[in-house]
Length: 441
Image 1: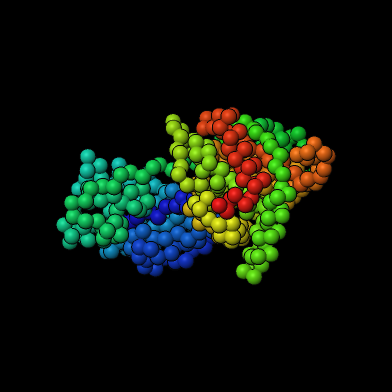
Image 2: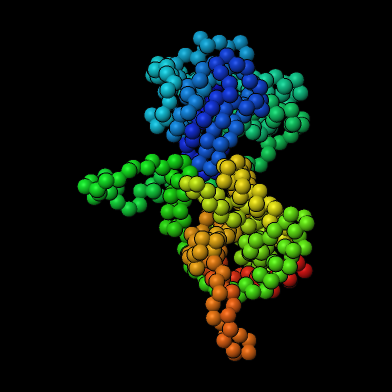
């Protein structure tokens, strides 16, 4: 039977997306790995690849359509020997998608097409393939043929297609007698739309400002996700806050010396590069704090993967610098510049902004003295960094002098890090920044 191609979840937080562009048309033949469409997620524009081979029988969602829900049917794929006459009638796209396509009317008497990696309905004819534990095994016809040629039992192969569908690559990589791979860890649940419902209703707010001129600005996918995730985080994560002042004079002198020496290489270190390195090393010095909350347990990490907030138009990204404790300041600087540039162009891949146990949000370049940042779950902490400013201080000899002081606030998840542990982590960050040469040892 024809196969439904579903709107994929291309990022961990994606609930809906925009079908920006079709790269195939009805009647085109596609193979596994062929790029079929460009899809705008809440974070970036990404390519959507085919996992099966066949012919595009019908496109149900027109390019440019917004608000297409994850797992909504966007097209129909025909397999060998099938034609457009086999498509029958399929369910209409959800009303939330602003599509110009004209899908066929749904009919209760017509069994829907089988899913692109999705289970079949009760109305679907009994499967010709075998089953395991009484459940249908879903595999593409090509995968079945290859499995038969190699003498493989499909029940022993784990599918990598949507919802576990077995595709060509799975069978080609399988060995006779291989057992199914362990189930991968389930993705974190997407933020609930209900989180955005906090506060007065839309009608109540519109009524309150009915006599004032205003412009309504609709929310794009990124802004909806930010609103939902931060509301959820603030409501569900038990935040507490630790504040310290950090003396920057030694760091600024050391940075100036390094930049002069690195100038022939075209490298210019920023204060933020030192902060990233200081936090990465602090997570090694206080390893109990290098952890995340995982529902009914914590996960403690060996490496320091540090996320850094990058402001972009309409929102922000938090690209992750992996193994940051192992990298030189110049390597961190170069990687951070590349990630920030691609973040502003919305060209980051999901693996580049997912993960990490700790984050940094620096508003010092905007002249902000200090602020409190909201933890990005499942992280256990985030460091809010203010501007370095000249202030009167009492020197070691008791004399009043002037120094460059930077105020920082560590927001901490109390489920993972207690007060004393958080204080030790912040002290380690302060020590690293106030004695920057030790970070090169």
